[in-house]
Image (tube, rainbow, N blue to C red; front, side, top):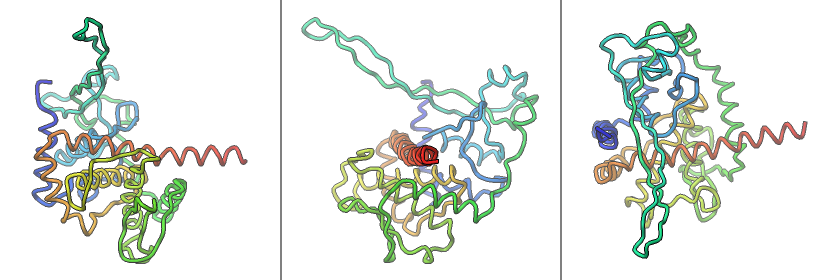
Length: 300
């Protein structure tokens, strides 16, 4: 890779954190985002995932783009369109592995899997002329609040997680494998409740019988703790985008900023790892919804 994408993305997020801003919450607070916030979309309508969500959310914020659609120069050409002269694209990344045969000391050959990351450039459709009309249609306004919250209620119930209510703290207890939430009425808004629940259920996915996610945490506030909190923050943001919910910064996020800054400054790959884990957690929770729909179909 000609440029260090790891460092470029990490530097951007560090700059936001040093201003006490959470990169993954900025799209919802932006005045230039018409309609509803969604994950960035490829030319074929499929959503980007992981670190690419943060990268393209940030790019859209800076440029004031409202459209969620992005595509390469060639994809635009194939659709009979063209990128306007002078427009600058934004980077996204593609991760994969290659298998290489390596000769061992004893003369035998052994396969070695080598991970790699490739960057390529995409343009927002607002930088492109001549595309089919549906690419330029603005997002629909946010759906009715009551309908949206019912949808969220169904989504989280489908996970089957042990969610208990009471007290004034939200947390996941690994020992008893349950999520503790204050009662619904304690939250500033229904959406604040569901955004918090999304955060705690992302923690819930780390259990050994689920995704078995472990960062070597030994005590509150150490590096492993900070990494897991970063995963939960991103996982909640991804889920809120999927569910049409507006997340809010937790009252305790300020306490985490310094620990996140230390992790990111010490490891330029940390945000990529956190985004990958967060995407895996979100996908894991989405899978329960699909299973529930299948079971309902069989029962019918």
